[in-house]
Image (cartoon, rainbow, N blue to C red; front, top):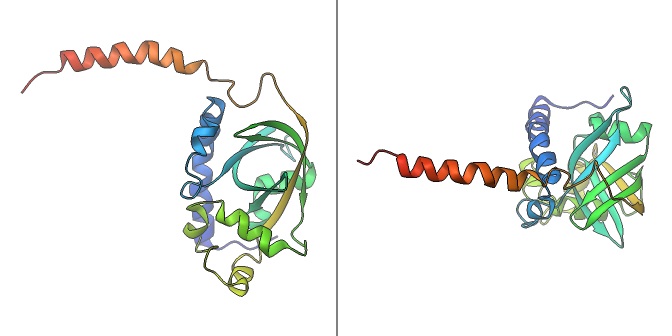
Length: 197
């Protein structure tokens, strides 16, 4: 099993704690909004995969880049990442991207001859995430990047068929009108009844 430092484990937990919020944003139809500032926030997709132990559907937001129609992402904490281990057990996935939802298959290509170039592109597309982990893909030399990403796993995702229907991005978009209907009057009431000083 891959060793992960205490600092990396803490960072991993921080990222993992934001996952439910990110997935909720996608489910509410805000995937394009999340990707509005890729140079800072990063390019984020949701990967739907099958739990290797439970067999349940799991949703994980990950940074990605698209090159020649193929999607690339990185398991930045190496082979210990649960979603990566699930892909190893079952490579059939779904991807939620700002421009659609697809069935796809995932493949570890960490031994690819262009690994370093592909890795650099994914890390550039990660916005603040790579620098937070101490990696600077725009300025690091190949040698430094190779050393700092030696444990990272590079994953290629190939789309096979477009998806529609329930269970995908935007399925909770109906919440917006409901929230506006209830929260707008409540906010107005609170503003009008607030004691004046």
